[in-house]
Amino acid sequence: MNCLHLRARRLWIAAALAFLLPWLPQARAQTAAWPDKPVRIVVPFGAGGSTDALARIVGEKLSAAIGQPVVIENRAGAAGAIGAASVAKAPADGYTLLIATSSTHAVLPNLRSLPYDVQRDFTPVARLATAPNVLVVSPQLKVGSVAELVALAKQRALPMNYSSSGNGSVTHLIGADFAQRAGVRTTHVPYKTGIQALPDLHGGQIDFAFDSIVWTLPQSQAGKVKALAIGSAQRSPLAPDLPTLREAGFADFDGTTWFALMAPAGLDAAIVERLNREVNAVLRDPDLRAQFQRQGAEALGGTPQELSALVREDGQRWASVIRTGGIKIDQ
Picture 1 (cartoon, one colour):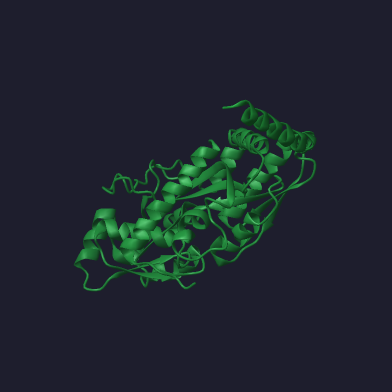
Picture 2 (cartoon, helix red, strand yellow; picture 1 turned 90 degrees about the vertical axis):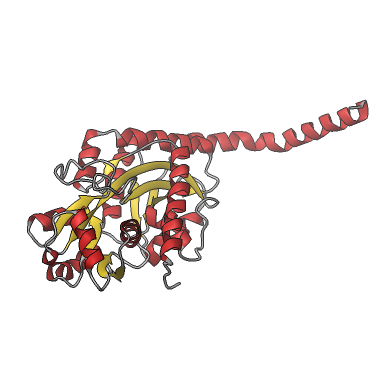
């Protein structure tokens, strides 16, 4: 490099520094000051559900940790897309966060056009929890195991009906994945919530369903449905006698729902690091873990990179199930 080029390069660097330096103290001050006002966590579903319950548990613990109120805001609609989109468009200042789920970040992007991009429009913060779904059948079927259910489905002339908590929901796709792996024909019957299908499951109009352990376990104990297996990798402490689908021969079967904390894209790395550290700390709290367990959930935690990988890999998995089943939903 000749002297003229070297001198020009030095002048360019000096000019760039002269422009940037006045802003650096302000940026450092903003990061150091976080948080100096309430933090808002958007739940993309209605109040009273499992996502809302977990968000409120985390919010209470996180508020104590950061010394600021954490406000939970429910923004339901479009299977979680409305709430997720609102956070994607929010300022990346650490004061607006999202409870992302399997639905908002792994399922919906493969089913419809969305006003956000899960990779481009969010900053991963931390995984929060995973919750298993349970395979339950109508007591009218008189089956006592997964193998008996599959054998009965293959003998039937007509497809078996299975219910879910909505068209395009995680429980819809878990049921589809199970049917594809079992090699049985099924008809999907969506309901607004899983528990709304209970009378039809009990009466035999619906043959089987996958849904939250929180309501399926008590209903199974009451004889309204029969629980056959759980979709998690290991048995649940809430139902230690209930085998997993993997034990029943469905290798690597994953019938869980995950929950995570996201921020808008572009959040300062120092705030991401602080948030991740605080969230992981509260997730180790024994009281929080006990509250999660009562919701049928297991605390996870981990790095932003692990969350990013989860979104990518789970999205690929559900994309395969959707393609194989030719699954479509109304836009």
